[in-house]
Image (cartoon, rainbow, N blue to C red):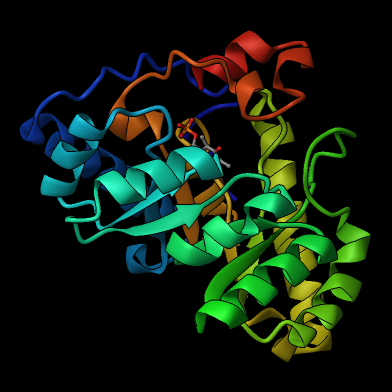
Length: 271
Ligand SMILES: *Cc1c(COP(=O)(O)O)cnc(C)c1O
């Protein structure tokens, strides 16, 4: 596979978008890079869904992004997502929760989210299903896989994914759409790429065995710093925050317990 962007992820400054025009420009730039990455590996750009991630972004700027064309938004934290979905209820936006779920928040997710991308326990599946059944709703889910073998990171170890998927039909409100991962926090492209390859390999192996287990067999992988690599390795959904909204001030360790401990966390922060 051709590597177009060298072995080190570039450090971006991700300027903050503060007008509809700036959002239009940022989104167009990301879409252009998505298309180029897809075409490099002979994929159709339309196979890749762009999920804009609005965590930490205040509601007035989210409104600008929606005016610029964002129809779905990803949020890492349930409380923040819930508050925004309530305050922005006049907008036509589908909310995707992409961060770890504490089961006591399942009721909230069942009420406002249209997708949950970080499913990694049967406890969470059961809690969500119960709340969804009560609300008469369904929820698209991605099963999160730990592809970097960093011990504290959320997600199932690759070898447990198939067994986990075999339990999910017990929770009929959950519609499995595929697998999700976060790559290792590193600017070293080969190590990042390895995580994406691992997720694809898990997906392919399970699909060969029993295609019904995996729904569409989607792969949600890639963020602002590494989505082009992820697309080269088969991503069908990229979760992009900073490249659309601008650099985040909150350190990644707030969202991922291990981000601060990684030796090159500074480089990862700049991704
Ligand atoms: C914040 C976040 C992203 C997006 O990260 P950016 O660097 O802003 O593109 C993707 N996935 C998850 C799970 C996140 O929490």
